[in-house]
Length: 238
Image: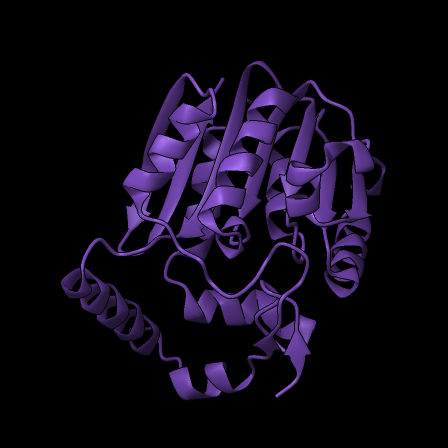
């Protein structure tokens, strides 16, 4: 099995956009919730772990004046996203930077991306950090946002009990089957991830733990506007 970075999921990047929609229920709906909480007037936006650029594209469509700074440690993901964004004509509004957002949280002086962002967004990326690093990242984000700035994050969450874990797993597998997808075939396209910087295999946290972290980090309003079994969207404002 091909070695990949955490978060890349599939051995071939070209399989990601279709594959993630087959593995995760309501993927586009989840991203749309992040976008709905984002003001259409947002200017400077920081994206952490841009992947193939799916969330970036939705932002560009919703926010006509948005300029996005995107961090991702995967060169192949940045290339894929950059090509997609260029094809859509949004390249002047997007800057992709190969960087580890865990390193940015720990040593921000090593990566000058500025501050006073109107928003920060992330999807399916932050759960690769351990809890101590999640907290540091949330604190860094809060300190980087302008007053009233928005942070939206979509991620899998840790089940609160073994019973719920089984419920969540069954629900996801049944959803995949109901869509007419062969779960074994989709999983066969996955790669094997290795440690990369501060990110590793899934290091999930419960909804309650993450809400407490966000509050401790200085966010004035924290909420979960969307949840589907073990997938959640967190929204927070400073």
